[in-house]
Image (cartoon, rainbow, N blue to C red; front, side, top):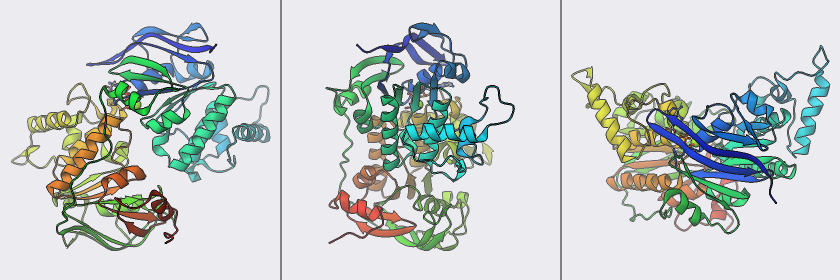
Length: 505
Ligand SMILES: Nc1ncnc2c1ncn2[C@@H]1O[C@H](COP(=O)(O)OP(=O)(O)OP(=O)(O)O)[C@@H](O)[C@H]1O
Ligand SMILES: [Mg+2]
């Protein structure tokens, strides 16, 4: 008989104008991996933030190991053995792994820090979890995947027996995701309980024991994974079928709209530094850039968007050299940019939604009139954009910070796509989007192509770039390894290019 470790009973949470959680009943078993599914804004993060003591519920009760508990802070949560791994890590880059893990933890009865002992203990736990980590390394030098492991280590070191992971794989490469799943399996083997949030159904299928679906703040159903199919989960979440296979007409390429010539641009590492890259994107086509994260995607998008000046080479918009132009000048050339990092580059989190919509066009009609800001125009435009892209928010006055992750992403997409650009640079467009929203965004990108926009799509999601692109380039260590026709190329061949070897004939 499965043993209950945690139970939500009629838990509700209200925000102004929003019922984020509506009388949620949910039972979690000891030692299971339980996935939470639901559309953007369904209330998944809110429910977990309540459990972790970041939000206070407005109604209902949480029971932990059969007893009612009141969790008022993350510290309280940890006292009960509940840990949470956030998407945005809370580590100190210039501290070592062991320092980060043990930070603020006292060792009983010892006036000086027993460094050797502490290190040993951290290394021991890492070993138990089969994590290949050097505890003496600085956290700032670690890849995102390893930093996430350090976060997990930190939670376990502090006594967590139940771990919450909110979209942990969205920042990981497929390889890193695999490693995370191995770690989660280990933890489960040691008797830990895991609550896992993801929009990627294949991940949910592969690691969960049970699955719960939230919709509009309600808990719709909890099911055993056995006997569940991705189609069933989608139907529960969205209430209809979703088709991610993109249907598009043959592409009719026009003039060259975007070109990079012999581009060299610095990245953070040798691998992510661009080395003499050249390619063209024509009006009316989608050119995809596939590749494992960290192979120059950042340097490439920065150079094209005008965020960082390249070391040499040229960026041309419709034949004109724009290499020295700033972001705003490029904007004026009907260029739109959807960055990978919506929280840093895409949005100003403290601004209201309508202000965010106006961010890249505040000086133009309808956001400005005769040189004066036109707030009514801004609000009307924002309302229309939000409606079109189905952004879930109380109104245009809400702060961007208070939107769910997926709805923040939709806001950036709406702003940049509905500008009707001639050149559209999209990086990781479906990051954090639910499956219905992915389908919608794919359609929108294809619509832009058919309207005549030149689209450059940079994505580490191979399925996504294969499905959307008309031509596909593969980026490896800052160089283009080759071009393939995504309609006929085999996944294994693209994979080979992504790993840096040429296709074997
Ligand atoms: N601090 C807050 N203030 C106001 N509204 C909030 C706040 N936090 C969340 N909300 C609202 O509560 C609802 C649920 O949001 P939540 O972040 O829980 O969704 P989610 O299921 O995690 O979605 P996603 O998949 O996009 O991350 C949303 O409508 C969101 O705008
Ligand atoms: Mg969320």
